[in-house]
Image (cartoon, rainbow, N blue to C red):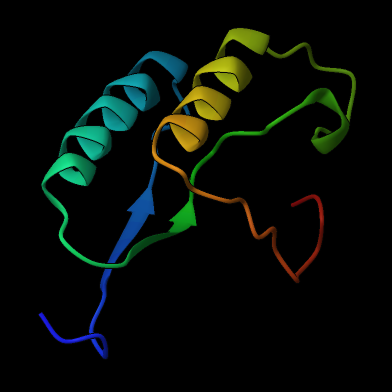
Length: 87
């Protein structure tokens, strides 16, 4: 593959933490087979920490942990968003 190509996966993750964990495992298995640059974009329905959450509803930090591990294990970066911080 020439250097002017890359793979882009658009993601809309489930609002349910266990289903997102399944998605992280699936995407990690794809990452192993990737040759060349690739990226993920979309709505991950996940946060990296409590500071990204607005409101008083409690959240499961285990979901944060799984998302952080997924990003780390696959050498991915969260580039953030440039729209409203909380929707």
